[in-house]
Amino acid sequence: MNNLPKRVLKTLSASVIAIASAQVAAGETVILSTVDGRTSVSGDLLSYDGQNYVLRTSLGDLTLAASQAICDGAACPALVAETTNLSIAGSGTVTANLIPLLTEAYFGKIGDSLQRDDPEGGTTYFEIGRGNNSNLLMTLVHSNSSRGFEELVKGDLHAAFTTRAASVDEQSAAEAAGMQTLRSEAQESVIAYDGLMMVTHPDNPVRAMTESDIAKVYSGEIDNWAAFGREPGPIMVYAREASSNSRDLLQEVLLNPYRKALSDTLMIMESDAEIAEAVRNNPDAIGLTSFVHRDGVNALEIEGACGIRIPANEFTIKTGEYLLSRPVYFYHNSEIAHDGVTGFAEFLESPEARAVIREAGFVDREVISKKLNDQGLRVSHTIMRDEAFENMSGTKNMLQLMSRSDRLSTTIRFDNGSTDLDTTDYEDLEELAKLIRSPMYEGSYFYFMGFSDSIGSAELNQFLALQRAEVVRQALVSRYPELADRVGARSIGYGELSPLACNETRPGRNVNRRVEVWVQDPMTTLDAPKIN
Image 1: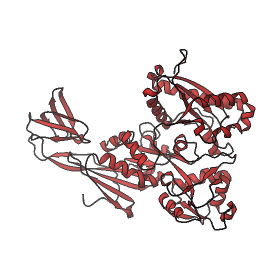
Image 2: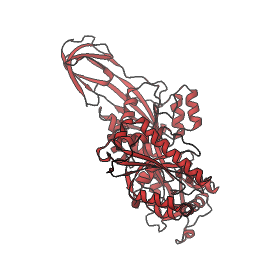
Image 3: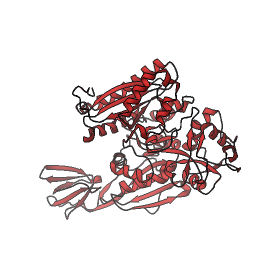
Image 4: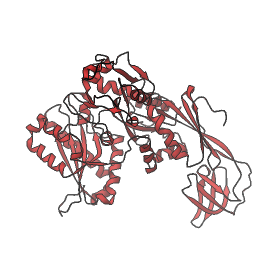
């Protein structure tokens, strides 16, 4: 494997193990172990046909795929290793900071790996010698989300990590190519979360900016720090290249609502890491970078048009209420058989993978909780709104209930006017179900609180919020009926009462159309309703 390929192969070979000696000493005892070393079984080797071992054990005759087993014993056939090619694409910070660690954590269990970079081709190669004499050559393509979807649909990739969901056009292209629906549970999963932060030099006294001012800075309308009460000096503005998801999110969330376009005088960087480093070394700099690179920079609080500020932290990124949150998706073509991809996809949902995700600086999917007092300025944001005065009894009821409960990070969002759930919502419910099964929550009471934006009548919004809360509760019940005897649950609609972002902009309204999950301590009353 010294001459590594310079491009990803369109048709990828499956693992093959050839017989060097056709003779198998049938009937002699051997030990077969899974390639990850977790499971082993001993018995008499009855036969080997080049693809499967047949072993006689105390439990009966077992057939094990050779590609997934290591044979130990004098009766094991002599094998010649052949190579499996596996190609995966990743974008930006995910490629640089996460995929190599996940690759090492999973495939490193199988054997020693050798990493080689090909900067000109934008690829990294991992050569992995596995104990069952089947080698693995994994090609990591340094890409962006758009290119990752394009090559996955074309068949040039087995899998792609992206920082956005597949678009309608990308889903259509996949279906036209004969693939299953991209946004299906078979092919899409959210493995982690990231967030983009507006950052400045640690010594910069400016600690917050409005969305409007940020739009003016990035459009070039404001170009001097004197506008923010600091000593005069040019604002050095850093941004990612035009093809990056970071650039798209900056334009969509912070510039489009104020009808601004990015200035052509921005200093363009190829990675979030480069932006963070530039800001650390330049007192006049400002830039948008990943939550992963939060050390050594000053993260600005971003204030919406209505005065609401939501900081970037683990909880607000998990809930999606931080406007610049972004999930990390894993897409794979389930119709292309490949043991490496199948096993890797399963590994990404494991506790081991989540430990790697946290180590890399990303936010994992584990459900966490916060009390009302730990949710920043939420109470003041709520009671300062006109809606609170128009519905004092509803506001009082809501805050009393919240004060006696803990909010979970599980938060389901909805498109405008919709009550439909998507793949990521069902994944969130699966995580919630795991939590409910834990002993500490047995007998607890769960509230599914629906909220809306402020478009339309308050009465209709409260009804729609309740309807969405009930959709979420019913989806949990129908998928996990065994939870009915463990906890109680109730759906509540609070409509416009507690906005977490400003309804004046579309991204803010997207944040506000949501269902939150709150939990009280185990119930002591005999008549507590159950989750049915």
